Amino acid sequence: MADTRLVKKCNGESTFGENAHYQDEAWGDSYLGRDGVRSYYEQLMAALPDLEIQVQQQHVTDDNVLLEVLICGTHLGRWRGLPATGQRVEVPLCAVYTFDSGDRLAGERIYYDRATVLRQLGVFREPQTLLGRVGLLATHPLTIARALFRSLLTS
Image (cartoon, rainbow, N blue to C red; front, side, top):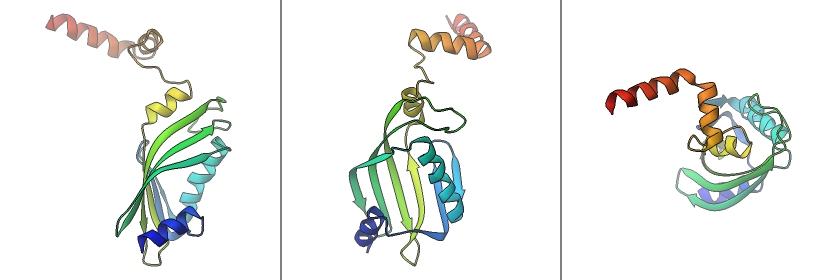
């Protein structure tokens, strides 16, 4: 039965059920009901109008479908308060799909590394790089001062 559900999902024939939910684990966000799920996808499509989802692996169980995908697109619209950067993103993501008794999608839960997204959009720097260190010092001076103080005490 799950194989049929996967084919329907991939062909766009399946819809989210009335009590559907969408969970974006990287941000800790939940969207409830069809309208909530629709809202999530509208925001995503506005931010990445050329969105492409490349399925890398699919895993089917009796109760779930798991997809390992590569999300690709160009950031051309506002997303999570960030104006369009024009940057291209390619983000590995794992999605877990559940189904209701009517064989419609009941839920989708996604896992990915949000630092990867923010790095590719140009708004995150690794703390071991020069730009990352300057950014940390400028945006978190108290945290850095406490860390330096602690390191002096333990030396």
